[in-house]
Length: 156
Image 1 (cartoon, rainbow, N blue to C red):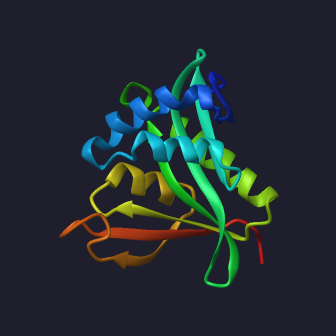
Image 2 (image 1 turned 120 degrees about the vertical axis):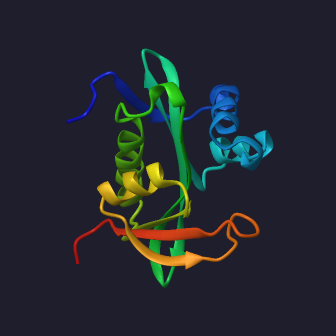
Image 3 (image 1 turned 90 degrees about the vertical axis):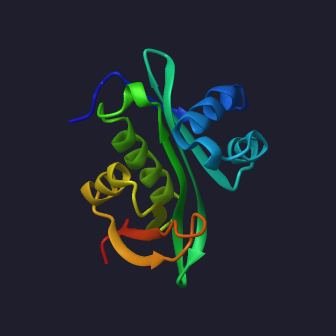
């Protein structure tokens, strides 16, 4: 059941400051630079969606259509939810919304990478039927492994 207070829309350049502050709050020194976030919002090859609660930006998700293992695929680059809005369904709503956009663009599968110790994110992805694909040694830096997870977006 969706939280009716959560609204999702495409990000606009006016959201840049909010998105950057959320990115820094969520990922600290690993945060994307503001210039990169600006590209994620403005370049048409990316899909960036924001979640609003009471007209305040609660989180965002960004992804793109790519070819992965020979298939047209969605690739989720980042999902960030402000700490005070966690456990309210924001992450789930963003994930479902971007999957819908990716499906509309013809993606058959969706994949993402997550830090091996990010249990909350891993649990969110498992809840949404993502499955472990492979371990990525030193993906986030030395001794900071990642996990690649994948989900089928269309029935075979």
